Amino acid sequence: MRRRWSGLPHPADGALHFDDAGFRRAPPDGFAAAWNEVVRISGWRSDLWSPDEVRIQVDLAGGDVVVFGEESPGFPALMVAFEQRFPPVAGWFERIALPADDGHRTLTLYERGG
Image (cartoon, rainbow, N blue to C red; front, side):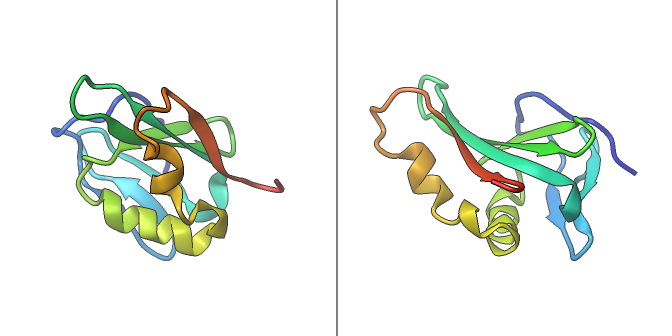
């Protein structure tokens, strides 16, 4: 079961969870995706006046996209799971967030076959 969820996360979003099968977000903005559906992982720093927020976009097979931010409940543990399953993601935070005055960059952290 997979639902499309796209947009800017906010504190009311459901918590992020993962297991051996895949990752998901609890309602109200629920979705579920299998690890093998991931085709691209991108990240950027969103200018929210103060402080900025790091956001991650996961493109899935079939064209679905999920976006979540570092303030999403469960985000740190999910990013560790991404690093374990997709080694090019390692070092993601520093590559996206630093240096702080580098403007807005979107970086591809992982791309299937790339």
